[in-house]
Length: 146
Image 1 (cartoon, rainbow, N blue to C red):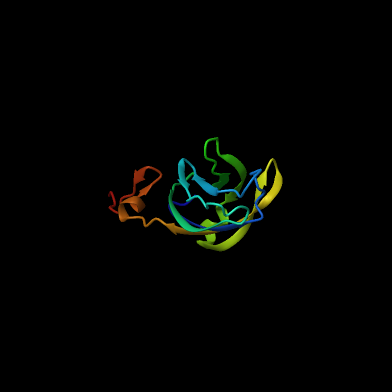
Image 2: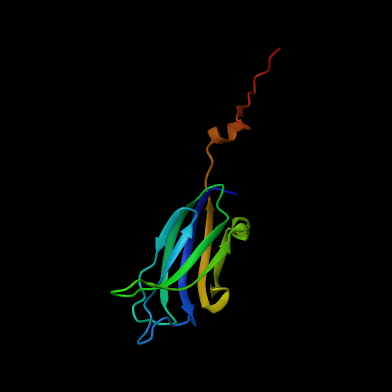
């Protein structure tokens, strides 16, 4: 897998299942890329159709192959409610470099709980010459021994 930076453009969500008995949800999103985690702002009182229009940047290393997205409902005075989640495989992104905002299904207990719109951009790391001189742990030499 390539190294570089991953930009996640969190746009909005539609049709999220409401976790509130009274009033509207205050949804936010937690995005995880390997051990890195970013949290969106809380879309206060936006209920089942929140809008964020926020971007997050992650460093990508060789062993990153997916992005995990979890939607939560912010509650005051009690534990935040789990709304749903999804996992986005990154293999296609690493080839295409950019995926425009697309709709992804939000799941909770393997059941559809709405959709979320996310765009992705991958920028490969620039390798310096020193990185390219090493092959298999040994430095290749252009000099000949005679």
